[in-house]
Image 1 (cartoon, rainbow, N blue to C red):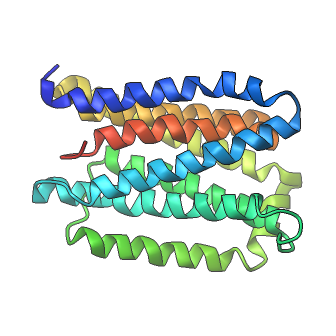
Image 2 (cartoon, rainbow, N blue to C red):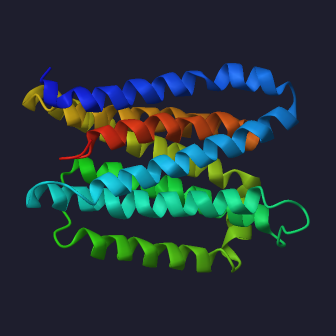
Length: 246
């Protein structure tokens, strides 16, 4: 493998090692729900920071063609990072400051973050480009986030949380898992046919997200801390795969 790809591999390895630390850290925090809620904010924060890192690196691609492809990451992971941040604020704001219906609102926003991540990787698999200044697309991501945040104040979050006796979230997880799996297959095949290491890293990231969606689909909301670790690993892979990036 060319030395130019060594930084990308380094990022993936470092993030993978950090993800492995989750298990002993959970044991140190102790057993029970209290331990999970102590670990979950840390992992969610790391997921948000990695999303912002993807956006930051994607804002500075070296060539115009690569920048056009990186702009897709700017929008998708910009929206995902913002929604994950708002989700974390709502979930961990505490009972005193927690607004009515905040659990439904946080589920609504975190679901849109996952949709944004899956859609971004799907568009990347199709090699869609978004020509224009990267900062303009960053502003577009901010606009989409404002729309989603505004929608969380209406009746949609409560409907989504309780539709089909709460099973709709699992249906969404299955749909996202299938879409991500298709993206991973396309990216992996392209990486083998064209000898494109960064496409392979995108495929790894999509595969990691598939594992997260399968977890959500199988266990529902009972495994939030485990789900939070998946964007951690996936985000590192995507960041390393940014065209002209790391």
